[in-house]
Length: 353
Image (cartoon, rainbow, N blue to C red):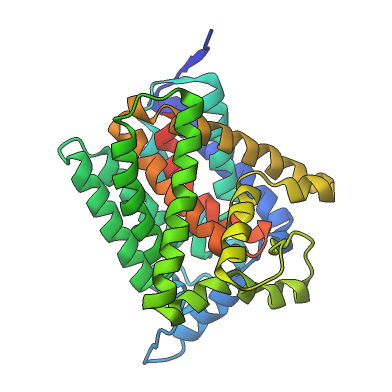
């Protein structure tokens, strides 16, 4: 029998303040563990304060420009930015959950864990905060009661395209696969399948779509095809230089399209279920392994019952699927994967509420 917990706005506000304070304290205590790209963005933001003409040439510069505009307190350190962003998002994250008045206990606990992870990894002068803003807007679109499901999907796709133009160009693939999987899943919902069969077929469609997509672009856009083929390896040199044992390298050697598709399927499974980290066996990977397994549990649970999901959950699971599909193309290691995944917190809320 499922157990539920009853909440109100006051309780939610206190919870979010506590999570924010604990995460900021831990982050400042071990700031060198959470720097990631923050140093680079901070230096770019500082440089914008010293010049009259600002030029943008990539996602780091775009992030630096946004932080330059919101730096009303002349912040100069990663620690200061962590405090500033955490305080700002107390109110944003409160508005996201304030109307959740009753929730299953297991959903509540995982929601809190996901929120804590967001604060620990994203809250600060990071690119993940900016990507989170796009997902917050998508959350607002999906929750809007007067917009039909099809238009919610369309507006979300448009927003993902805007994100690709202004910030991370690979999000054009997330937008594309969101639209494709939405069409497929709408038709799949009409079928009468068991939960197990529904999940298996939904995943087989992913690999089918990826295969067709790669074959088509290899002929029509050969340069883009080559870029996708080597997207993940672009981050290897830097990661090997700084030292990491969590690289996600292809298990099968070869560069033809058939081997790439096989590697893609393997890597898709590897990012969802971090078997590599289990094999490595280091203690500090255990929290992420547990978190990822629980996330996959909720993903499988919802996609298996997509036929009866409400529109909000259905759209959330569709966008998450597209996000997973693109991540299997490009994530060079598990550290990068967990950072990028934190922005999906706002889609996870839709699944859990």
